[in-house]
Amino acid sequence: MKQPYLLLTPGPLSTTPTVKEAMQIDYCTWDSDYRNVTETIRQQILELAQADPDAYTTVLLQGSGSYGVEATIGTALPREGAVLMIAVNGAYGHRISEIADYYGIEHVDVVFNEDEAVDPAQIEAALDAHPEVTHFATVHSETTTGILNPIEQLMPLMQARGIVTIIDAMSSLGGVPISVDGLDCDYLVSSANKCVQGVPGFAFIIAKQATLEKTANNARSLCLDLYAQWQAMTKQPGKWRFTSPTHVVHAFAQALIELKAEGGVTPRYERYAANQALLSNGMQALGFDLVIDPAVQGPIITSFKYPTQHFDFADFYQFIKERGFVIYPGKVSAIPSFRIGTIGDIHTADIKRLLAIVSDYQQLNR
Ligand SMILES: *Cc1c(COP(=O)(O)O)cnc(C)c1O
Image (cartoon, rainbow, N blue to C red; front, side):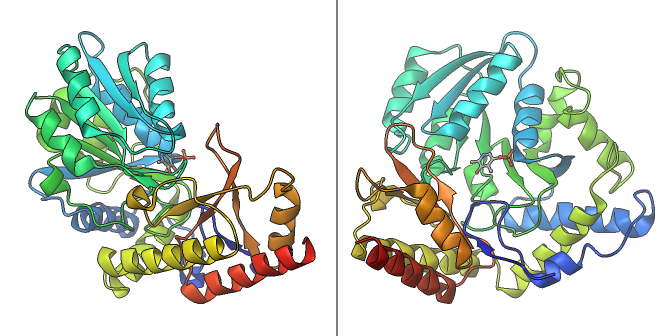
């Protein structure tokens, strides 16, 4: 079967043929072969996130990334007496707020414009105004726009106040250097189908063991009980609580081997950043304006404004798709825009080909 196009979307993304091949074997979930694979993954995630294995643990959870975020929110916050502050500057921040609503968790949302990064000074002022806050959640790479939020500046504000911290690093872990030890955060959530370049099927949560230990009986959901999932995986090493996505787990194990072969997170970050710079400069040369300030732009995904009022995104999308690439509609509510991802098994030669296609489109529609 031939891949009809490359995905320039921020997950699922284009994976290597060898990652796809790793899914050709059927594995039994309780056999030691499989459990060893799970345990290796849990360990390697701590390594790539620069998390001390004595202080942190990795919990794997079936489902997409949002299941991981929901399990973390629903388990980290006790049923009574907890207040969550959420820094919101895009759709994924809003999703955390929606999760809090479902769980009846009291929350204070500090909302920024979608084309602005979270501002630590405003968060500090909000913390001073809300001394009742016990937990804080934010998004690292806000995939809505491609903004990279300053988690390194936000964490110390929380630690100074004894606030438990939750970071949605879904679209950055593995593609942007992150030091969990340096951040000293309590929870950091990501998933299989983003920068590690696996396929969709599970989320993973890096959790500080001392914090997670205090969360027994907090969860309001059986399947999304992060504490119970951790206990099960630890008591019987590598054993998932319920049926796990065995093929996806093998693809992920292969993706981790390939991340190491690439040289680790920093070379991958450099590849993504080179893709992003080429894309951003090339698209601007073709007359597309950026939605966000390059100072807060990350390497994952870039938003471009529609060039004219008459721009027909559906037609543009179809033209590009027929020539081998799938791009992404915009998610910024206030600005008509579209997005192009630069993560996955994507290289500058691919971006050059894309830019030539966009240029052809413009010639034809002049
Ligand atoms: C992809 C992503 C998620 C999770 O989305 P799912 O569709 O549930 O996988 C959460 N947060 C961010 C920032 C993301 O990029």
